[in-house]
Image (cartoon, rainbow, N blue to C red; front, side, top):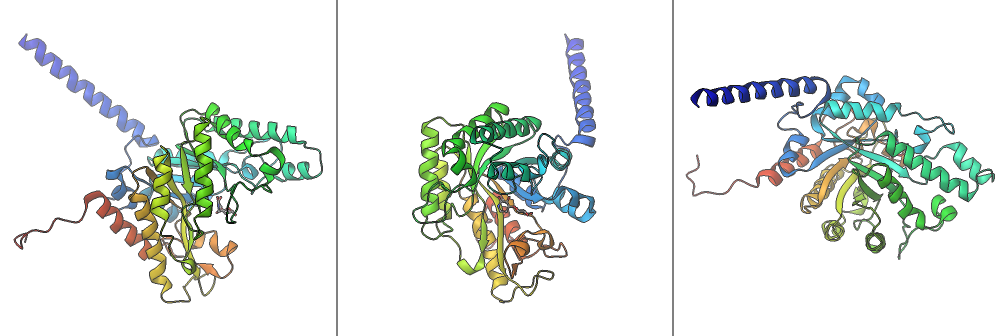
Length: 385
Ligand code: XIL
């Protein structure tokens, strides 16, 4: 009996060592819990409450060691900035290029990160062969519907098991008051509003385990009237009533210091959550007017306070809602941001400066996450020293 017991302990120990060795081996090349981020990194500070801090990534920038280091150390989720969009994955009809997406997925596996897939149905960044085929009549509406079904099926199948959240549909609501599904949208005008539900069904069929999101901007009160949020809320309720497989709502979170912070944000995220949905901030940045696109120094001194303030408020809105599972910044360095190219005269929109030094917004996020995980130290009676 005694011997037997010793043997059992010995065998258990050996098995444990073996399991450890296997895990270490797997970890050396492919993640599996082996990556150790710095303890004061955003991802480490957010880990105790189960929140993922993400960033958009340009996969070929990972060739730069500084960029790759920050991507791996600071973030527990990554989103390809462009490399899963239709224009990039199928530049020529019938010929796929998954290289950018695949590269990011493998980086994510090596760094214990999850991947947000972005995006399957959108009016922007479509391949020329598709849009010109539609406008010259060689692609009929029936063809278009079949092409979309095939695109979603092929892309979701290619990445099956490797995507945590998919932005299935992106930017379908108008900016007017009241807001609604945009009848002039490329997809809606050709295929009708029902195509949205179909897109979710097709994505679900191709990867039943991925979380499927509807993603849009200004849907957490950023428009001031809350009209767009009201419209998305009403729409997603009907989707859920029809058992459409939609798991979450992503608010892009592109803010601008000239408009002030949307005070409705927490309440808006919370009401999506109360429907049983996950929520996420998917593309956070806060732009402001700058001297030029290279240096990106704010022209108004107060903007250096407003910019981190709005980042912090947005993170806190997510922290306050238990179903907010990820907070993703749309790139982490001002030099890599899309803002100067799209908003004339604006920049300084990310959490690292043009030289990849952390900005006040980064420090504020660190503080917010520290407080979220541990709370403020409890006051004593003056005898704590
Ligand atoms: C942007 C990319 O960052 C740019 O590199 C690209 O030229 C245009 O698209 N909302 C979205 C994102 O959903 O896909 C957009 O990304 C930014 C706005």
